[in-house]
Length: 404
Image (cartoon, rainbow, N blue to C red):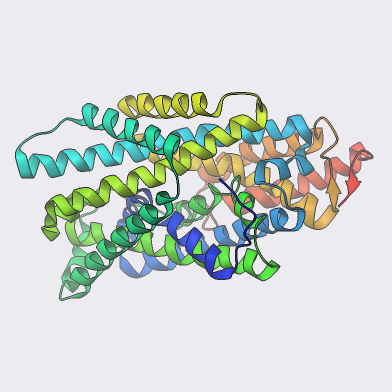
């Protein structure tokens, strides 16, 4: 999957902007509708600023150490401790695969119902799931071109959505906010904006390890994902305020795109879900290097498809919070160990202080959620994890770590 070619700032910008352009990000942005246009955009930008900063700092570790993300996590948690990060990453990636399949199948059903009077959610889930598995197995030189085409098509679709909203639809903003069925606090909105960049923390070093410079690693990743993901969120926000739904099928039907829109939905889903499946397989191989990659691809794809048939999308927000609750404290330990304590535990079995601190940080994350702080849950839980970890290191008198 990876080669020896160095990635410059522009290449990393394109890579992360492309990763951000997905249906899931549009749907998440739609959840900001109760806040209205201005407050929604401000919180989207603020959350992405925090999340992308954490993402890019984590990517710097991969660049400096020339190690993929989950191997680099051994520097903080030890060999077996890093397996916990791998396991959490595998779960979230299979979850993302299922969610992408659900979104795609729902969109296909809505579009085919309008065009041909036919719906079949389960059938479409299985078909698209099979396409994802085949795509992952046979992906070759043409994949990048097709992926870029999907990204461009979806980007154009988003521009059309925003153009329609801007063109004389001003009254929709206030009515959309008033008619929202739910409310959203500032802290919850900030959290949902931070979480999406956080979901890439276990993967970013797989790419920044190939960066041509520190500048390319940090700014290419930061600007690409910040701009791409923020744009997707704002597009989802606009879609809800304009059409009353962040379902891309509703927007496609409103725009009269028909079959062309259906093609965009399927292609963008397959190319995004393929990355989830592939990354999950690579995480499994970090734990069991001798496993068959082809078999794992089939198993992960099948599991994602099976979950998609039964996963209640009403739990989507809880899925996002689960990602934040695990990765925010864990990578607080990773970042603190690397940039402050300059410790390397790659040769140790596990870092008890780090693991315990991360667990306590996860518990604190949900405690802060209940408090509904304006600062969200990620930042407070990471700060608390850092303080607890510093205390534990002092009490346990860490002697096993080597200096980076």
